[in-house]
Length: 339
Image (cartoon, rainbow, N blue to C red; front, side, top):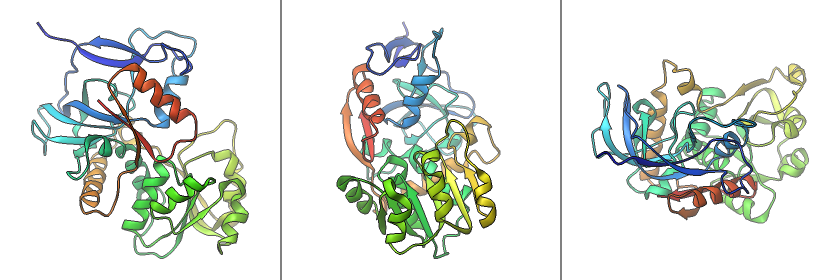
């Protein structure tokens, strides 16, 4: 008799304070498609995307089947689709997956092999599991959206420097480019963390313009904003250099005045890590390439994990605790969950 696998998800959108905000259930093992790996998940992490989807995607309704979250994972390959290349059963892999498919909050997950890579050997499962989504976001922002030339000696302002995305983006910028990195933080502990990640300077996002200027920078060539787009818009407009570029990851209600960028001929571009999987773009396998390059940087000792807290156990209480922590807005680095 086939033993069903355990998974954790939600059928309706509840505040995380409610006991059934996340529930455990059983389901059949996923069937991998031609390009898929079937992975036994060993560790995952929590991202703002998890909490956002849980809070908003099933308001006022009850899903027929629970939705499984989890967009970071490390695990062991158990089955391989017929079109898969470069992987074998038993490989240890890491990935961020696909927001349109069931996530990693399950014992087994089917994931497109083109967005997975071999995990770094030098990190534990949970140390590695906190990195894929933020790595892909930061790498794509720097090289695919802002199109930064690694050799150019310019400046980048990373707003939200102590968060998961800001932490790894700072390290990417410092290890793969010649950029001067200004990261933002507003507490002694977050300032210390941003410096540990490699930031050349730390500005206070509560008084962003004056803080950056006090560091000796009237303008910056690039801005990557990982927090509060609308709240920082006017400051970004003032700080961006003529012909500079701004990239954002946080959507917002209402709108911002793009016309304010016209006089500087400054550019604006979104970064969404899931774009390649949602639209099955022709370059979808770039995500495997990015994670492969990051694994090499990690194993060479040039990039460190952004793990700051580990929660133990694959159960709803653990994941509810993780969601509550990420929703507090006070977390530094990344929270990992070891199954």
